[in-house]
Length: 348
Image (tube, rainbow, N blue to C red; front, side):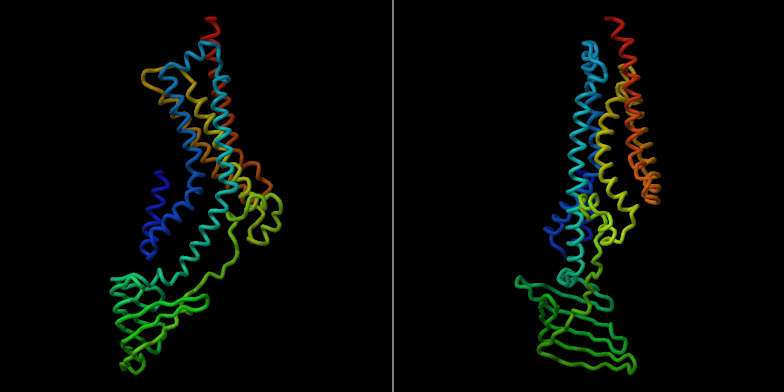
């Protein structure tokens, strides 16, 4: 929720200031939620395991289980299952949900960027919807009529045009966007002659179609390509997205590795807290040890990302950070098993 609210606030500032409705804001916030989940979900798994294990140790329930003859490997089974299911859930999100929502979000962003209504329909302040154009509306009626409109056009260097009208309205179809103004005045200022001429009008239409620059870039982003297509035919993906093979291979394996990190975080959080005996000062040292391993994994991940992007044959090193977490977990479990054998098996 913290990450999502932070994202929503940024969207609120940008979209509402551009004149879009709160419903558009809600759509963008929901579509951005899956990508945020891929970042938060592994950390949430790690935090959940730390919280539960710490509570079990404080209540001496782990001590009771170990006294009953259960080794750390046996006690690790529920955490193993929890991490596995979290990995499956996040794997579905990273491989299917995120590419689709990212594509939809990008298409809606392009649609909003080319929305003339959102750029112009802001009452009570001067705006600059296009380069060289200043626009002002005093008010907007419920039927869409614009009241007391001011338009200053400086796009033509030879003459500047200033339109004022008591009312106007915006009309748009698939090919043209026109601003119709009624009962107003046109002031024309010649830059070379430095003379001003005025013309009264009952009705005038201003074509704004040329000022709208729609996106001509039809090349899809690599993050919008489906996972199945990345696996099935990377040559087609390279042709469509114009991406290198290293980038394509990294995108595929990075989606899988994000999900795997959930399993690593769950097992690592449990195994680190089993080290050492119960202390009235808590388990700050064990938690700090687990966090240190997480930091080491993230630092290693940044370097493996650079190497894999340079050479697609090095794709196995993408999973090296998770391997560090698994090795650390095995080491912690072995240490805990040794302590368990010395403490509990000797008393049996």
